[in-house]
Amino acid sequence: MEADGCYLSCTAVAEWTNAQGLTTRKVSYRSAQLRLIRNNLRQMLIEIRADKANTTIKLVLKGINVLNRFMSEGKSTIKFAEERCTLFLSNAPAAQLITFLKTIFVKMTGQPEGGKQKSKNPLREQLLSNGKLGGIQDISPATNAELDLAKEKALLVAASRKTVTTPSPSTIRKRKLTDSNTPKVPIAKKLYANPTAVPLTDEQKTVLEAVLRGKNIFFTGSAGTGKSFLLKRIISELPPDATTATASTGVAACHIGGITLHQFSGIGLGTGTIERCCQMASKPACATVWRRTKYLIIDEISMVDGEYFEKIEAVARHVRKNDRPFGGIQLILCGDFFQLPPVNKMSETKKFCFQSKAWEKCVHLNFELQIVHRQKDPKFIKILNSLRIGRITDEITTMLKSTSSQKIEKNGILATRLCSHVNEANDINESQLANLKGTPKTYVANDSDPGMTKTLDQQLPVPGKLTLKVGAQVMLLKNINISNGLVNGARGVVVRFEDETPVIQFRSGEIYHATFEKWSVRTTSGNVIRRKQIPLKLAWAFSIHKSQGLTLDCVEMSLAKVFDAGQAYVALSRAQSLDSLRVLDFSGRQVWANTSVLEFYRNFRRHLHDIEFIPLGKKSQEK
Image 1 (cartoon, rainbow, N blue to C red):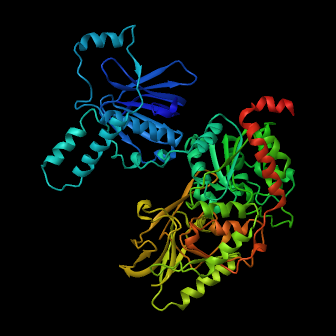
Image 2 (cartoon, helix red, strand yellow):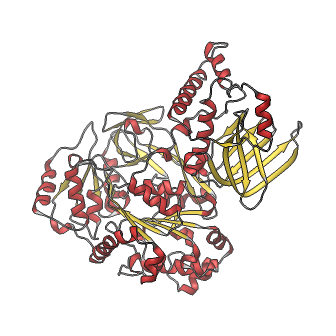
Image 3 (spheres, rainbow, N blue to C red):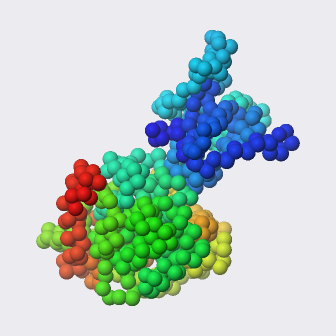
């Protein structure tokens, strides 16, 4: 019902002021339901109803000003000029809020000029709307015609804002469009470029629906099946104040706008006993975060050690004083156990999360995404799916060996070398940069909190200090212009400097004048720290671990030194296609899958059908 954009669940505060700006009335609803309605005069209203109260507020959407700068964080403000009322919205699921604001914008700009249809008998309709017959009706979802009209008007207003002459037809048109009935939304750039509007596949919708039904879930899939994309969408559908997004690594956490699991848990590396971990997590600041969390997201779950998972599950029950699994927190777990395994610096043995006692009692439903989005070549996808489970055939070996001699360089961009060890990649980048002639240019990041620089270095892909020369091979670290191919992972080369700014030519031929971009990291206390830096990194070489989650358009590798199950698969699956890949000295011995993981996925797939059709309660009883 909420999906049509006419409903919103959030925290709402309505504040009325007098002509002098002094507050005359204030109403706060910690948990409110908003819906768009229309009366018999065809006026559109927002109805605000508290979850635990019978009181209702109705505000006419006329002469409003919508502030949507922070809507991606679940916050927005709507000012009703005529009623001298300001409505503050917060803790709204971002996707729901964006759709709600977009519906207001579309419905109001998509109306005939004048904002409402003329009535044959306005007095009669006024009486009906105020009488016992009510006359209130829900707003219908936005139609394609309304969407097209709203977009057309948005473009006209955007064009009119560019003029510097007065008066002119465009500015006159602008006044008409921003009359008392049209929302003064900063024109729909954010609303129409809304990332949550990208349609989900049927399999992705199934996972999202399970989350919204309150189930603890684990979803997996091979590399490139859109796991991170779906995870971001899930986060946008949940209330921000009660949702904690985490990941096993800093880079993965940054990718979904979260923090590391170690930061959130408050138990460090978890080397102490369960009793000691519970003591550490019971400190006021940490305990507050644990208690307010209703939804816990863990990305890259494959790299979380099983013993650590058991400890934080026990900590959750202890700190929240709740004996239900994970203290009653809803879990959303994501990852691929065929990729990089757990890192446990205190022990040589690796224990996967699914091998822990906590896993079986905490995870209700399992899902596997099947559709690959990163690679488009069915032949390459088939190869990668075989490599994922450690299956090597003579045909696969022949095909991968044949890439060793192919030329994948283009427009001066060399192939990025993927290395099995971080130090090896760093050494290659530093030596190649030193070999270039010319004057180096160094760019130092601007951090909002200099005391948190070390944390930012650990969690962000962008370096605190970046040194470049003409000819330096670089990788773009942020989506700048998707339609032009300027995306995270795109490969380029520095061709010159203009006014101290590096100019990059990418493999596609696109030229980019690099400017400082912003990254944000949320701390456990909820504060946000930011870094501004040129969105580039040296890219002669990358470690396989650091490449996880990236899509590379020009990559080569030697897999002779791989030391973990899944490492070769992760490296090979970074490539977009066989044509953009060069594998040196390939051998079937470099590819293998962990036997415990293979067994887990066999059982996992065997039960997928049962999980889909047998109600959870019934299945639990049969056990």
